[in-house]
Length: 68
Image 1 (cartoon, one colour):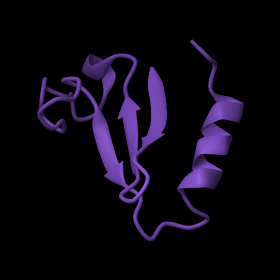
Image 2 (cartoon, rainbow, N blue to C red):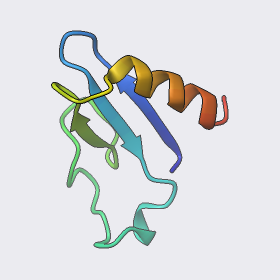
Image 3 (cartoon, rainbow, N blue to C red):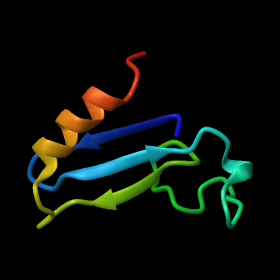
């Protein structure tokens, strides 16, 4: 993964960016999973009602992923 972050407060979403979209299975096409205004290869997962919750996920991502 090139990046993973949690965005939003009331409607949190996990935004994932693959390091090499051509190596995903199935192979990603630009804009296939993205929405307007986002990068062409971003995957967005809604976190509403997820447990333990978006704050815990933010902490774990910050702890495990390298900073830029």
